[in-house]
Length: 505
Image (cartoon, rainbow, N blue to C red; front, side, top):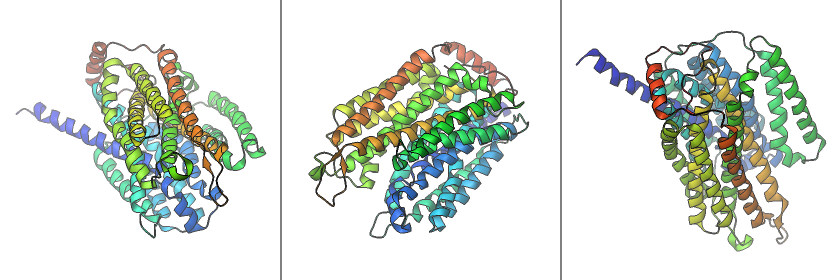
């Protein structure tokens, strides 16, 4: 057998291992977001914390992700993806060990801040894929890695539920699970990810990074804490006002810096801008389904008149896990559709499924079969969205901006998730059922119906964004894409500053 014939399977197996390693790393990212949700009550009881204080266990990770994701995405583009990935995973492991060994709320929050940096792994992983995977196989590879995000969210809920069962639940076990998975992901990255072939170098735009970080903190802090602070309180309004001011400062800084962290032309480029809008709406709808269904199925029917009285573990395993499993499988179909009909059409089809799923959930959430069936359709919608958005971003920016562009898209989804969490929580608390003294207030069923309807409207807006907002990005025929892909696969890696060869949009 010739050397050429032996080399081809070797390269193919290496690419498969690369995709699997990056998929595992991305899965760990999403797990950090939802891992603590089932154990917040246990943490509050064990540490004698108030509800407002324990909420920082989730808020700290969100803010950390917002600050570090764009900065580290850009750093990876400049100085190499693999060393940046390794560094981020080491920080996440250290944060997980700290969270697993401390009994102090302050140190737990610090550990969660360190875990939040892991969100940068996702845009870095997509940058590696663009550099290493043949263009013809790139949409499928990105879809697989993106699909692990939804799967990881569900797996974290199930794992946390299982590890805290029993008469004496211990939240520390949940963080030891994070340590183990992060170490495995680190081993995969060290073994399967090659050294970066393209580095742009240059200075780090610390002023731009600082102003963007301040903007995101001022925006996300009142969104996540507004329910505790009061939506009309001085702190909430002041933070939103500060975010508006910092947005102007950030734009001014990036226009004047010689080597900006975010190229404003790229940020305002129509396909990028509308893909980020789609990401915000998708993040909103996904989290609305997660929170809404989780709360709905735990409602005691004997008291509230609706719900199924499910435990936290049953809510995760029976009602939410099917959604995440469909997302993982559907991501592969989404990757195939991106290659065949284009990312814009795939996004529109997925969003249409989302409208259908939430319409079903809005109209009929009185049986377990309806809730699970609607959730599976929504899972398909989420997977198509995750498969489409990286392809839209990659097709719209030069190679040296892949990390930062996907980092901003990740932040747009995080903002959408934070808005959904705040809005759904506020809606459910705004109208409650009158119960005897001493019983906790329960939301009226109409508030769940309204929440699902709003999430369906978010998916409807994604359809509009895909069909109208992204219309300017014309998709080439599949045959043309294959020709370009074949030509590009014979070339060395794109030089920094080159324009994307194949616009799969």
